[in-house]
Image 1 (cartoon, rainbow, N blue to C red):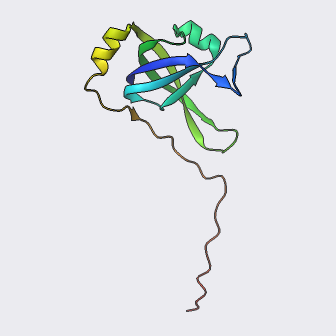
Image 2 (image 1 turned 180 degrees about the horizontal axis):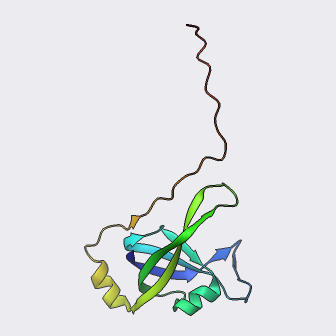
Length: 125
């Protein structure tokens, strides 16, 4: 998937969320193109190694890298690797974005965590 995205420092409760190396996480917002989600949060060290910096715009490639269960909901979530293809200057990004449509987002599959019992209809045959 290739999309244009803007970046910012990801904050939790008003403070930057730091990874185990004390690097702030980076939030990548999809502006146009095919993107995994509208907002993708990348751990600080991973973001730094991939070339992401806050307050920038990039042409980004996202490749599916596996699945994991969401610890809170049990939903099966897809994991992605993000790579910077090109840092975009504002004037270049603006010319690329003019006339573009909203991003096409991949919807995450849902997994049932409990089996529902059949409803009783209250009639007998």
